Amino acid sequence: MSIRIMMVDDHPVVRAGLRALLEADPDIEVGCEVGSGEAALAELDRLVTLGDTLPDLVLMDLNLGAGAGGIETTRTVRERHPGVQVLAVTTFDTEADIVGALEAGAVGYVLKDSPTAALVDAVREAAAGRSVLSPEVQQRLVARMTSPATALSPRESEILEALAGGATNRQVAKALFISESTVKTHLVHLYEKLGVDNRTAALRVARERRLIR
Image 1: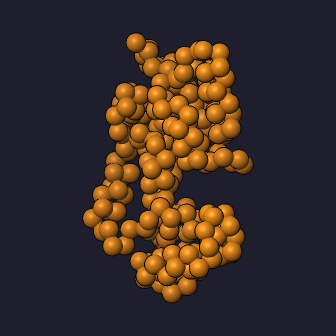
Image 2 (image 1 turned 180 degrees about the vertical axis):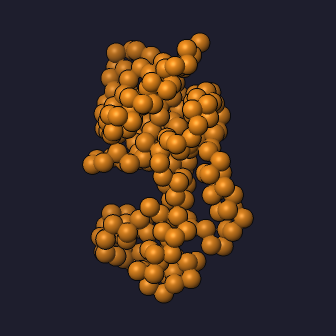
Image 3 (image 1 turned 90 degrees about the vertical axis):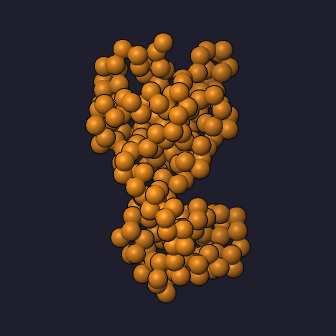
């Protein structure tokens, strides 16, 4: 029984490489490939409307350029089509990306530079609904679990990512639908966990620890 795949990646060359790699396995069929989160959701909705078979698994890049990101798209796919599994396949191994993707409903998280056999095995496991993580990702999650006092919460990671993009406290509050005072409270906790006393130092330490990109 073949595994039907949808690939979501904004780089055509990457999609072509993954397709060639995966379709070398006779049990894997890449039914479609798209370059954005919006296109992925539209295609899934189209298949439902036509009564066609949905893919077993969506391979989701996290950085999709303009528009909806991979984490947001993963969350929407899982909400609208719970029978479709999502496997994050990306170059990023930061804690914020890993935790965000898994909390959004991804069944696994693997890196694009994983060995071919590992990627194929990951596709098989994820399509069956079994959790799969690259060794590097497992190490980051273990480190997070063994040092819970310094681990960032998903909200703290969101705020840190927004600050890295140059957002002010007011802009962060507006984007996350929270008050400025709440943002400031999160920053106090962030600074304490990172052992710093200002946002510049917080961003530097967070990048050094690979908590954010």
